Image 1 (cartoon, rainbow, N blue to C red):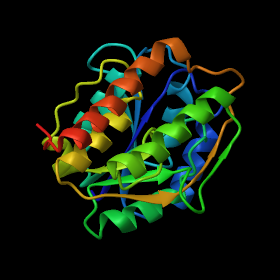
Image 2 (cartoon, one colour):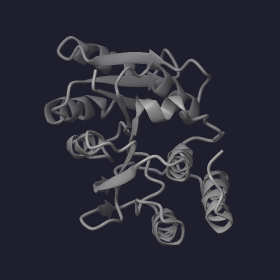
Image 3 (tube, rainbow, N blue to C red):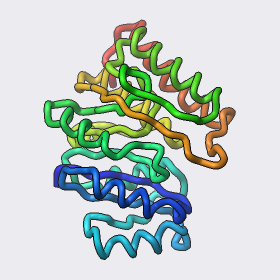
Length: 236
């Protein structure tokens, strides 16, 4: 198995069918698609079961660490069998075609490949303005101040080598800040980090991103990287 796609879900029944069709029709690499859910009554489950008849690469995986986005991600990363593991959202904000380019980078020896909204050729369409500003500032500043080899430190649409994941302890305790944690740790740990452009499209009717709750989680790893750079310390 070359590639595992980890897709955390929470009542995505209305859109998951279109997401699965797009992934299975555009991702050319042999892969498994892990749909990670919390509850047995999640609306995502029934339509996924229907698609499994046509696409045996799709697997339903129940969260083994407890409810929530972070535990779903940790479950998916643990259960993944691929040499490369990609985290992707279920709501079509991420463009599955980009996965082919991410895998091309992986095959050239990259351990972390970010789908970047803020590099040349990347775009972001919609979404809360303050979130756009903060994520752009974080990504661009870490690129130039810390030397992080991506312009987009916070986008969760990211591919990791299995060997890298096996050597990393996850310390995040919130959710999607996991992406910035793993990326800055990879950079300071001597792993090869790269990026490819992506178009991120905001489709949600209401935002699930609550600034007061999530900002400190991201800020922790942003400052961690800045301090590492200023002190010239290796990752430990």
